Length: 279
Image (cartoon, rainbow, N blue to C red; front, side):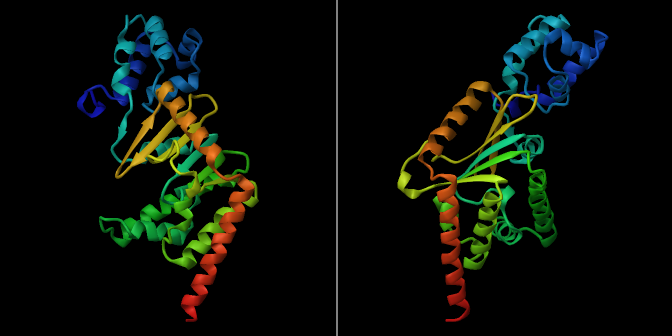
């Protein structure tokens, strides 16, 4: 059953956990010691931010004396479809210590320049007011502040070759965009791998995948399609996404060769822009 058809949501699950913990007179720290689940993880579960694992649910049932209550309701949380398709993934992004993303069509939002992002937001099928566009633009550009800390998160971007060949905004915009990515790569702030057309069919050909890891919480995966996104916390699904990413990475160019290709294509765009300005 899809979660939107079931009255038990992750938020309600978390509220029920908090209510029953407090009925037992336990603090989060005390419940953590009993269940051997970190206090941080319990706090995130109660706030509806994280999905308990099967082991978590069973330990909670034992500790709170609720039979199989938490285990039985666990399937209602599987594969939550995000209504505002990136909202939940955005929250996780700000907490992540490591991110690996495969971008099949567009430059990842974290790496977009302002002019590239503006072109993407202006080109949607549904027209946006200037106010709405600028608000979205501010949010998108603000995400890049996570790079202000050199050590976290560790970010790997795997770009399909179509990302760097599709002239979003024209050759001038693309020239500056690709050089921006290359500069981040040269500064050792990110790792970049281009997946060339010559790789043919590969394990991520179906679409965008974003993997995230955290200090005290289990990793997650985010997949995206047209106007839809899905956050996966089920360990077996997350692992499948990780394996698919690793397989595709094996077909991609090295970091060094990818940076060289980015700068070469950026130079081609620069020449094209100059020719357009001086026919």
